[in-house]
Image (cartoon, rainbow, N blue to C red):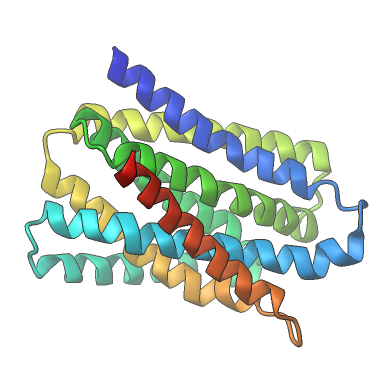
Length: 240
């Protein structure tokens, strides 16, 4: 019961960052030019840095370790990247101009499943993964809100309500990982590696190109800051 409660708390906390990021983005009239240019591009790059940090610091190392260093891990990462490419082509993400929203969901679900399995196996890395999911959902929620508002005829209230409903995805995915995958370490590792490949594809296909802003230095620094936040989070867990 304690483990189930832990999963629900961690995944809900991570999921709440989605509408929270959207809420922050809704204050567009505070300083519209600055928000739309410098800050929005900084947030996009920051989210990309967090995702890259999650891949490099948690998902790939844990996934490879769980598969005992097998070269199959490389094939799974490649499969993840290629699968995300096929999903993007099938859904026409670039035409719909909502890569941040779909990217958020595509990495949130497998990460939450892996989180449930890690909690069940009492892995010390579980709280770190939950923290990184939260950190990446915040900027992704921010960017997704801006995408939805710009590409669809949705009011701010409807958009935030829609994003709030996405919170429930985390606990459901986490409990699936807990009940069905906790005893299958190889499967959990494969999920983390598969998600890593997909995340890497999304970073360089959609997120990184959007973050660039001509003659501005702030967005690239956002990627550096995001990666450092992920690294600092792991250092805190190791030294705790």
